Length: 196
Image 1: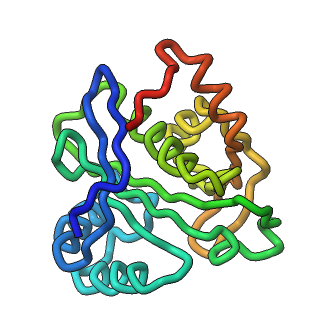
Image 2: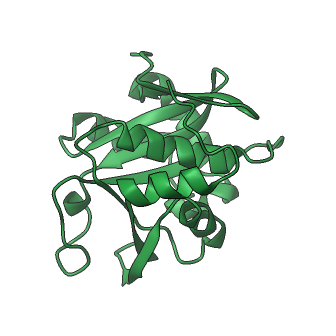
């Protein structure tokens, strides 16, 4: 289950590759990420290993969600969760359109941060999602307290629709169209695509 499903190479930080999450192999690692204070916005700080195992197994069996581990030059460093937005967001919060896909993102806590890594990881997320021709728009709902995450997604053409109250957080409902993403990327220094 370690099949690489997507690769993105950045001249500065190297390769980011995505593989499907393997609940049996990844649960202890994910638990250590979720309980770290740097990952507070996922709301799993008090989770046990068993809680994380059950979460991983539920997502692995879900027809609306799938998780991927992001590898930075071969080492696990990211969690990407792709989902059908209407499975998490009610009609009072979100109006689905054909071609919508949702995504959650987590950068693993580290004691040796790499400058620019999270920005490239966010770009990789969008490159991966838009590599599917059926995806027209990416929906996200970053916690309103997570201003750093909001700033990063805005740089890639994301638009804040409005503030929404969800069961576990107050968030910004955001959308990123394929067109807005590519326009934003082309405006960045060195904006040409480097995925393979």
